[in-house]
Length: 123
Image 1 (tube, rainbow, N blue to C red):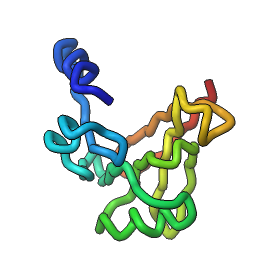
Image 2 (spheres, rainbow, N blue to C red; image 1 turned 45 degrees about the vertical axis):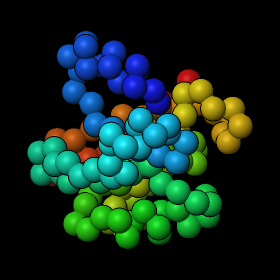
Image 3 (cartoon, one colour; image 1 turned 180 degrees about the vertical axis):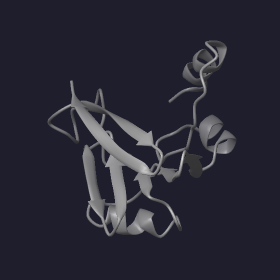
């Protein structure tokens, strides 16, 4: 992500939430937090990039949040949409990466009241 891309979203009047990741330039990592929590209707969502090996990533990021129903993460570039121990772990994958994943994807999270589910869309 570059600041130019973010500026384009802001200029278009779009509301966005940004968390920094391990490959972001200092302009991003200095300007944005490594994690964020938001509430939509009755659902609390944690957003984080993630770090380290693919193995155990959900255990690591789970410790960064308390009292969330959803954790959205990236880092692995591998799509994931599954409930574990009462938490929906959602990784939309990557629309462009061909190194770490065989299928490019994006994702959508639907929230209505206290109900939430994710959808992965293979491109």
